[in-house]
Image 1 (cartoon, rainbow, N blue to C red):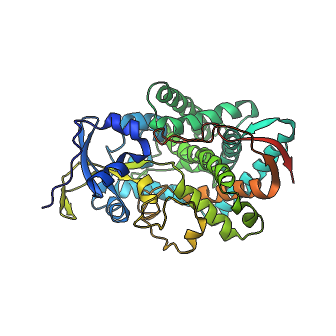
Image 2 (image 1 turned 60 degrees about the vertical axis):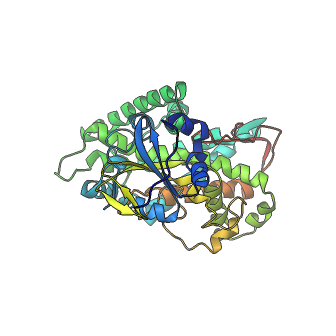
Image 3 (image 1 turned 180 degrees about the vertical axis):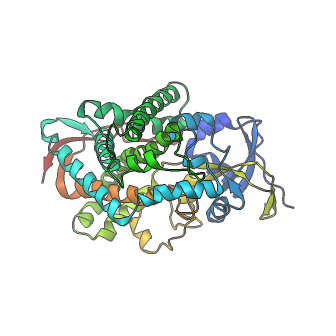
Length: 415
């Protein structure tokens, strides 16, 4: 039996907040190991990194998600009772509902909506001296997400709904006021969509068949019972919230175009594959998800290490995506690397790893990629703009990270 390296700190909770995205990566380098033990919130935990680690982490015979997500994250980011905390047959049954919304035609419909909303939004920009990409993307994605999901959204409530969905994401790595804002935003959002679901069930409003509102208003559990309205609301927000979260990626898209201007002309005259490679490299290179948690289902041994039942395990997402073992010159922004990528389910995991249908990989990953390609096309083929002096820095100790300025554009002109 091999001894797992152990972090000498009595508890690493404050170190996680201090180091953020690099917490696991730094210690793996220090210990020269892709696995080590630590304590988080007073509980023993094992941290793992890399392709092999991800392969184990997404084995449903070895890990479960129930009890792995701290309450503070459930009360902001995921909600309580949602698909992220289910295992086994219950998880697969609920996941099928999400995947049924991700058909080729439905995704195509969403991309049309995203593009249309961008075109509506950019027509308003000529009257503005400056605009912030992050704020604009939130509005675009919220409006498109609600239209696609069949969720009624009035123009006067648009900004509040977009801000609330974004605050739920922003709170996952926050403490204090950020966490409180995220909780309040979730409470408002759950009340909003819960009321809609109750109205649909009472035939007070009509939900179009095939939309997320219709799906989760009528979805039944394994016992043939309708989901509690509270749980149905959580799942409907699990459609809307990740789409608004694309605003973080869109902001890094704009930053990447500014930091690596040699790609702009290539993208203007390039193929769809060129666009996708650039989007994928943004997802790999810039920070979004730091790490993910699960618990050991039954005791097992891996690489000479004994994993005890119910032990908390954290998988390093950020470090795996940038691991030198799997990516040549991982610290270099190089979209062309994806022409040679082996499409492994475990070495590139910005939204989780494994299989979409059976594992906890995000059902909306295709949508994220598609929506980012639309935003990239808008930025390179539909707009001319100046980038004024601003704070482009982003902090890896802040989760989720974002350029401090939100990326400001000025003197925006339509092509």
